[in-house]
Length: 103
Image (cartoon, rainbow, N blue to C red; front, side, top):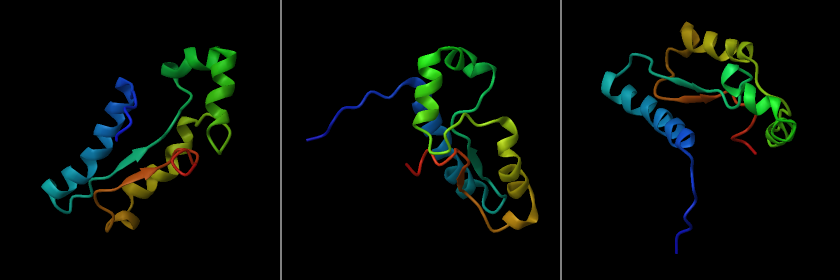
């Protein structure tokens, strides 16, 4: 028996992007194809969610880091993937999501 779980369009879009990194890495072989999975970031796109007091408490409450990510939180992951330190990293998705995937 399988459970049917509704996953919204945004979730499906994210899952397809996550699947693209390994596929492109195989196709482009050794060109350093990687991705960053940032989780919930405080941007203009999430302004309506953050303006709603219930949602603004509920969403960070499910994130172990306990807060919305800021765009500058991704700087370290971006620098790592752009540096020679990641030369042997290929086809991976780096979760920079405040431990969302580790919960």
